[in-house]
Amino acid sequence: MSSLDYIDLMKLYARAGIADWTAAHWELRSRAMRCLGAGIAEKFEQARVTIDTIYNSQNLHQLSFIPMPKVSHGGIDRCFFLPVREYDGVEETVTFELFVLVARTDCLAFRFEPAHRLPLTRHGYGHVQMSRKMLRRTIEVLGIPQWLPNTYPAFPISTSDPLRMFLAMATAVHGYASGGLEDLLTQIFREASRALDVAPYHDELKDLLIRSTI
Image 1 (tube, helix red, strand yellow):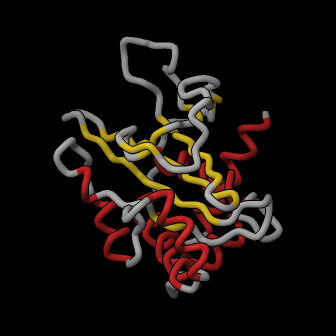
Image 2 (tube, rainbow, N blue to C red; image 1 turned 135 degrees about the vertical axis):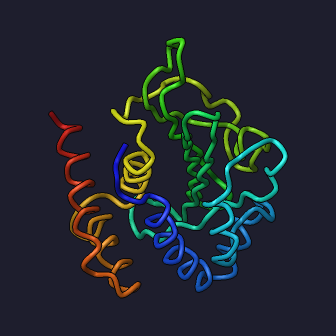
Image 3 (cartoon, rainbow, N blue to C red; image 1 turned 180 degrees about the vertical axis):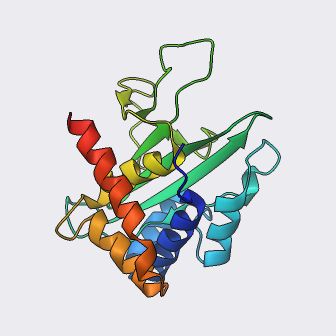
């Protein structure tokens, strides 16, 4: 597992996403709320609680979908993510749910999951797959086609590390260089007056993507 602080990175990223979401047009906000209901983090405190929560079946209500910094490519209107941290008494694992509002109330959802624990299973590797339900598969979301497959294909992402899974998810939304996640990381650390702290995250991102092409 990476020694870098993925919790800290998610909070910086969430601040940028909520700032963009606060400035979003009311029509976009209305469409997203029609799909996700009241489950969107409108303030940073809601995002912080979500990020800090160790999930169990009793605290599901504490989790909110966190607005991601806006994108202006690929026909995507806005994206939201939900980190679900779990601890089994031995190890913490994290699943990331990604919600993509494409147009109108047409949506897609994905789960970035760590390898399923021993004994080995067919999903015994870090992977991303489509999802028909969200919030730990407890809610059906308006706009997600119910004919989509829910468990396969399960595309390998070559990691179960929380930081790398988060970077993989964010790269899927923003791209890498030339205005992608690399530049966004620089921006969010600079805005937090921590410009010197971004270098190891750039290195981690570069290593993740380079290794994925070998």
